[in-house]
Structures are given as structure tokens and as C-alpha cells.
Length: 294
Image (cartoon, rainbow, N blue to C red):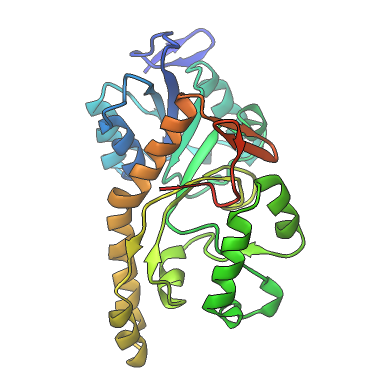
């Protein structure tokens, strides 16, 4: 990483705006970044112009290796050197500005200060994409306390109803009490325990609320072995279910996360996807709340 008088500039960076430039943030294996770098469209309609990590090489070796294999030297910024979240993201924003990205991609950006906030969020609003290993179009009323009481039929009907609506109109339902059922950590385990027969990864715009931003793309489905889950539930073998869910999530990184992230970048780079605060269009038409379904 070369340091310019104004901050940080990737050595391989070239001011060629014929492609859409992406800067990835990672904290581990950076599987989505790897998928994008290996995509046939990389270098043609989009390219990874830089990478930022909050973990040193010894703690995120795969992510560092992936970047370096493609000529990118990650910028390591330790959160421990900053007294506040605002100071951390102010420093990161100034550094990333010099890379001149069109899109910020989050590829497993975790741990301290992982929730993107100001001033970085405002500077790159509607241009920060994250992939989540669950279907964020599934919603419920949290006041019921036990979300599963809504029943699979009820959840499916609600999901289909919201999925057909424009995002700006569906937001009224969200504000009136709906929450996304599979947001946050352990989303895959929750989905398996709640009886989902298939899983989807979701690419969404980042807001200062965990997994709360506009849905852009949902991946192809990943089948769940529901019979196995039922057997383990009958034996109270929750550790086996957790292990099974962990294996599913690893498979989803390859089969769901990466392809969905690539599709979102393809749509954005081609100018088909237009994102505003409460309104998203695809090919000039309003995008449904559930986004583009692969």
C-alpha cells in the first residue's frame, strides 16, 4: 500500500472509470470478495479497486491472501486505536475516498465497530452492499413474542404480500411493526429450527440497523434436509442441528452469497439498478420489497 500526501492509495489503482470500482471490507475469509474477483465480468464491467480489513493478517489470512493474489494490498485499520466509532469511521472514510469506489462491498465485516455508521455511512449512502445468509423478505410481528406462532402459512403470505410491493410502500408496513425474522447472527440456525425448507442469501443496502436496508437481490434457494432436522429435534439434539446449520452456511457462501453479490454488482454496473433512500428501480420499474429473485 503506497501512502500519498492525502492518505492511502492502492498501488495497483488506476483512474479508469470504464468499470465500476468496488472496495471490499472483510474480517475473515472474504468469500464474497473472492467470488467477485473470480467472476468472468471482473475487469470488464466492474473491478475490486481496494480492500479494507479490521483484522491483522494472522487473524484473517484467507482474506489477505485472496486480495494479494489479485494484486491488492489490504488496508488494515485497527479499531483499538480509536476511542469512538465515529473516529474510526472518519479515518476509514478519508482513506477509502482516495480509492474512489462506486460501491462498498461488505464481505464478512465483523467484530468491533462492524455496524457501519457516520460519517462513513452518509458519505457512501445507498452505495454500501452487504450479503446476509438468510431470506430477509420473511417478516413477522415481534409483539407476538414467539414469532413461530404466526405459522409458516402466515409468514409465507406476509412475505409474498410484501414482496410484490414497491419498497417505499412496503416500508410503511415495516414501520408499523413488522421485523425481519432472520436478521442478525445465527440466522441460518434460526431458519433451520423454524422449519424452513430452503434458504436464500440476501444482498441489501446497508443502513445503521442490522440487516435493515433495502433488499436488492435474493439468491437461488439452498435446500434444507427438513427430515434430518425433524429427527434431531425429536431427540433434542440441538448441537447437531447447529453443526448442520453451520455446514449449510459454509455451502451458502459458495452457492448463494457469491452469486447473489455478483448479480447485484452486474445490475448496478449495467445501470439497471437505481437506488435512492426509499425507492429502488430496476430497468426503470419499481423494485419489489423482496428485490430481484434469482
